[in-house]
Amino acid sequence: MSHVFPRHCHASLPTATSGDGCFLIDQTGKRYFDGSGGAAVSCLGHSNPRVAKAVKAQVDQLAFAHSGFFTTEPAEQLADLLIANAPGTLDRVYFVSGGSEAVESAIKLARQYHLERGEPNRRHLIARRQSYHGNTLGALSAGGNAWRRQQFDPLLVEMSHIAPCYEYAERTTGETLYDYGQRVANELEEEILRLGADSVMAFIAEPVVGATLGAVPPVEGYYTRIREICDKYGVLLILDEVMCGMGRTGHLFACEAEGIAPDILCIAKGLGAGYQPIGAMLCSSEVYQAIANGSGFFQHGHTYLGHPVAAAAGLAVVQELLEGDLVTQARNRGTYLEQQLRSRFAQHPHIGDIRGRGMFWGLEFVADRDSKAPFDPANGLAGKLKKAAFAEGLICYPMPGTRDGRNGDHILLAPPFIASEAELDGALDALSRAIDSTLATVQPT
Ligand code: PLP
Image (tube, rainbow, N blue to C red; front, side, top):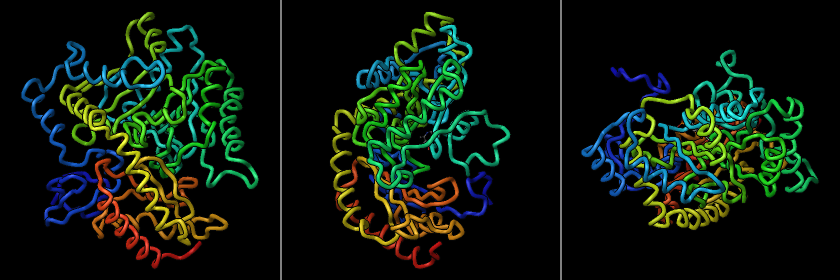
């Protein structure tokens, strides 16, 4: 009898015993291709010698020093490396232990920034429907996924949620991609004006929406307009790259593809690549200086801020990404993955959309391609797909509720950047079989 409190009380899980490149191996010796990197975590696979060595060396050298008393070499070096490669005027790095903590830090920093500048009325955060920003109460309040929020609703902080940039489902007939992007970006301006321009502190969004929409990139011009609106009203732009950042989209920072930079940026997952739990919030020099020249103290903190072993892992990961040119590899291998996905599934009667960037792809399932109607959620399509793929030796990340938190199903693929073409072919063979066997069991609408 287990004493672990698992995610699902009635699931019986295999025990993962080792990792080998892109594969995880269970206690029976069965190998699973990690087609989603867990949840877009394991960009370097599961047996990277450089990162493992860095972690071991750091534990031997110094396991922990509280950031209230000391800084450490790995934290300093990792911050330098991130800032040397970061977009815009991002200048400071606040290290935490994961994505939700990075988002919490970003929300609190946005509030304190305005306080320090003498604008205490700025308190509203605007986010988007169908986004995911984490499971702590602040991050969950920012998230716009109805299913995740529902039972905690009475505890959540009030925040606004505007439309996502999700053209497959929400662009109207006859509307160009560009016009659609401008229309939904302009919802930000409308919401700022509705709330009162001097009361809004920040807008938060995922550049490429991950878990809750399935790798949905923005349309051209969307983020340019968002940046313009934020600048016009003095609203901070927080980009959540926890899932899509660190090379996943073929850019070290996903927002590079949009030609804009945020005031605050959140990263995690691929930063530690699974070797250590680490996240970070990066902020612009202007935001940092508001605190430094004001109270001089960000009213926040956790015990494990800047943990040296986590920072050593993060440093080795970023060095590996940069020195091994693995971001380019993610882009190139991603082009192969896209071609394979399109050649196998573009004409599939129940796959309505294939979208993504780099090594970050989503397939959206529909009962009917013409109307784009999703399957009846009672079918539990996403859950069945996850099981069927796992039985085939493929880890992927299916989610229900793509459209509105309840209706719609997608699969997210986020394989390690080191995956070979042959490994991707094998994974897609397994995925095809899983899709066929699952669809044979579901009822349209
Ligand atoms: N933000 C985004 C975009 C995410 O995808 C996630 C996790 O999936 C989080 C935040 C929360 O990260 P964590 O689970 O590390 O707390």
